[in-house]
Amino acid sequence: MDKLKRILKLSIIPIGFLQIFLMQMDSIRADLNYNHNENNNTIFESVPTTVKTYENDTVMLPCTVNSPQFYTRWYRENDMIIDSRHQDVPPPERYHLWPNGTLQVTNVQTEDTGDFRCEVINQSGIYGEQEHAIEVQYAPTVITSPSGTVEFQIGTVFEIICEAKGYPNPIITWRRKGIDQPNQSDRLENRKRHLVEIESRDDSGPIECVAENGVGEPAVDGIYLNVLFPPEIKVLQSIVHTKINMRAHLECIVISAPPAKVQWYHHGVPVTTDMRIARNDVEIHRNRSQSHYYTETKHQLVVKKVRDSDLGMYECRAENKVGFKSSTIELTGRPMPCLFKTSPVQQPGTAHTLIWQTESLSPISEYKLKFRQVPSGNVTPQNRPPVMNWNELTIPAEFSEGSIHVTTYTLRGLQPASVYEVAVTARNRFGWSDNSKIIRFATGGEVELNYSTETHYTSYDDFEDNFLNDHSVSSVQQYSAASPSSPQSPSSSPSLSSSSSSSSSQVTYARATVSANNYIKFSFSQYLKLLLLMIFYLI
Image (cartoon, rainbow, N blue to C red):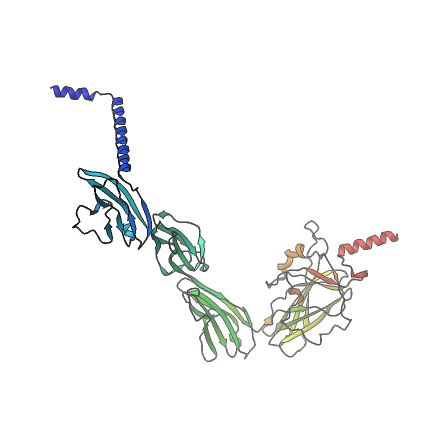
């Protein structure tokens, strides 16, 4: 009963008293630790040491005391290594205890990194203890997963994991094609994850994980990415001109990974090869390498003697496991588009001589010439005049030998000081050629404007919306015309390969014959202003 009363009395001790009691106990514990450290400082001549070293070096961990009567015992973590009281027990390999208590570790390895503790023992027991540490620094190593050469399609998202080892802990960075990449991954200890999204075949190449910690050379490992993509087709000549009984070559270049299977079609029907129609497939790059892992093959369809039935649209169709692509090539006997040439004759005010040429392997039967007057001067959306209709002329062709046909024609009855547009097509037994590029001329000279040097228009109405941009002739440059001559064909026909005036680079310019002192450059509006000013002074 008395014992129960004592317990009940203790149970009603205030909480505040318990808190004060615990605080006093912590203070006593701190004093004991301080006194312990003070005792260690008075016992040991050596001080706690952390030795940073490299593999295969020798490390000395001191444990010297002031008292001559002592024994030494060493621990690695919590495992005892050596005790000087037991000389008959051999120490582990690479460990040696010197008489002054110093522990020697020879040929240190990475696994020697850790904490060491020495205890000094006298007759009455443990006299003191001291902490030491060894940090073995070594160059980094790295392993990636996956590794080696990998193949993925465009649109694939995959992950590369990089595991690095080394001391100090390595810093990991990523490189693509030798260029450092921003950190896009989460770091978990020495593991880094890198997400890769394949957007195009240009993403192919090395992706490397680089680990470095200042010890030795950086470690590098990674993958080489080959991007699989559907075939790409390049057609250098989309229209092949020929004639009956002539040899014709149709060619397409296919680039793909993996290699593609190529089939030729004529009007949607697979082409069957025989003695007259043959195929020739040549790989352009025979030596494969990491940087050139895909195939690039030139595929030719050779028609040795063209027949009427061979003409028409052909299709080069390539397919691999990723996808397919096709391109069309027309085999035709029609003439090539006509090219206008600069007229060497001096132009009168109401007429203009045009020269054009075309290439046709069959005789030309006729030409269709279209021309119309276009607005000039300051044209704005507010004062835009109505578009003039095209005038069309059918011009019989003169017989000429060879494949180059040159024609000269003079348009008469034109309005003076006006701008005209003109285009021409040619016809042979196989049909009409594509439209020529439209050029412009001014009566008394020639104005050449570059609509588009790359696009062949199939309808003249395609140019209606371009008037506001191109009809304003801002400058007219004087030039010396050739001596007057009859409007006949030049003695030497210009070659089709020579550059024509209408296909000059992005420049809008005008040339006209103008009677003015010192060959001053005038626009039409400036010329009219000058004329009005002269009339005013004369009045």
